[in-house]
Amino acid sequence: MSRPRVLSGMRPTGRMHLGNYVGALQNWVSMQEQNESFHMVADWHMLTTGFEDVTRLKQDTLDMVTDWLAAGLDPKATPIFRQSRIKEHAELHLLFSMLVTKSRLERNPSLKEQARDLNIEDQTISYGHLGYPVLQAADILIYKANMVPVGEDQVPHVELTREIARRFNYLYKPVFPEPEARLTAFPRLRGLDGNRMSKSVGNTIHLTDSPEEIATRMRTAYTDPNKTRKDSPGNPDGCVVHEYHRVFNAAGAGEIATACRAGQLGCVQDKGDLARILSDVLAPIRERYHEIKSRPGFVEEVLEDGEARARKVAQATMDEVREAMNLP
Ligand code: TRP
Image (cartoon, rainbow, N blue to C red; front, side, top):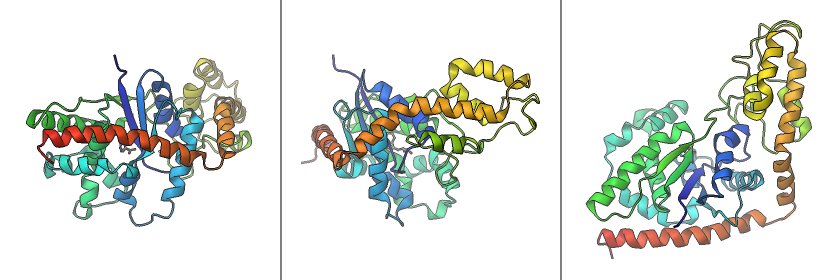
């Protein structure tokens, strides 16, 4: 029996932060043992909205993959590759684009949300951006993935992928499985200021930050504004520091909440404790990071090796696709 296939990817956003870790990476790392995983840098997807300024594309790719490896992705077990290096994704995207209507794409809630976030109007959305989920379907189905570990926001894209797979299988030949989204336990971790975590806002902690950086950043975290002194009773609900405790310190979080409510724990101390806990959790990641950084060219090698392996699988699928569609 072959193991289930897993595919997931991210747009190259550079260094990874805690939200990337609990929202995706941690899940990828834990899934790679029992499954046959593939992970890709969605650099073409990045271009759907970031086509104007491409100066950081290469460096952001390397920084992101460095952090994937530091987080524990094992490149021997798991091919890691750049989407744009596997041209077959583009071919399958083109063929799939025949099987989807324009109105179906316009109804996609993920796309609508993204367009709203980026202030893109209906009239100015590009052809490539509208086809974002079709390209994503090609990414997933070209590896015949069974599972797609993603955050909640990506579920509509996986749903469209299933529709495309069904349509192809029905029209031509049963080539594709119907993949399922695998949601992470913590779909969204808020930024330190309590708002949505985002690199551009600067409310993040990077996976490879030093213990000192973590402590400094943690001091800026949002806590209960009504807790004005260290001995006044606080409300841990809605407090970012407490939210992080629940994620990174599950065993201790209950006791901390009780002490906070009773006015026995001040925010300054609480933040210091959390910073130390986080530093410990991230210590193995930091260690691997420095090891990788000491090997120049290593990440590029990992990618080229992953690309050779991914390409073989993609090419085999495309042979089946062309055969099913009567293409030469
Ligand atoms: N759309 C995904 C994101 O926003 C990235 C992505 C591209 C992806 N292709 C994929 C995710 C295939 C899962 C599977 O981050």
